[in-house]
Image (cartoon, rainbow, N blue to C red; front, side, top):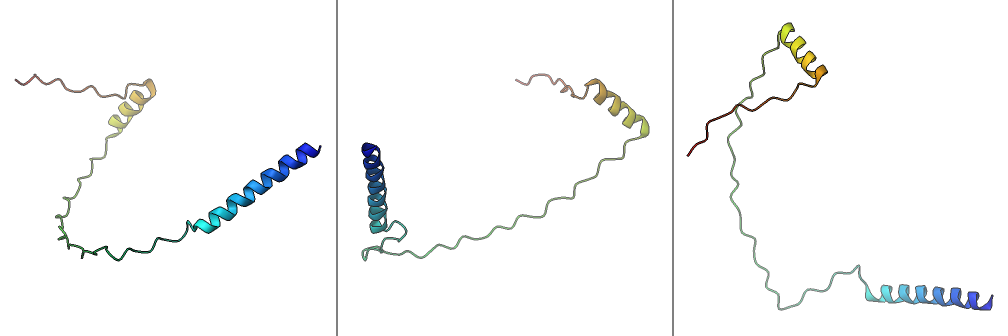
Length: 90
């Protein structure tokens, strides 16, 4: 029992020592600037304004037949579109 109490007391002392050391190191303070550092003025970068994007055209409303075809394809899992084959270019 005495060994256990001594181990706990030693652990508490180690934690308190670590806290005291960390408070004295002052991690939250920024280091003072050294006097030999030369501060350069920032270079102004010109702002480039791009032209507005062209308006996006809306897709035409599908007819009831096209809606039925799309619903049937989705129900049967045939929704992937095969890419059109193009001849290889040399």
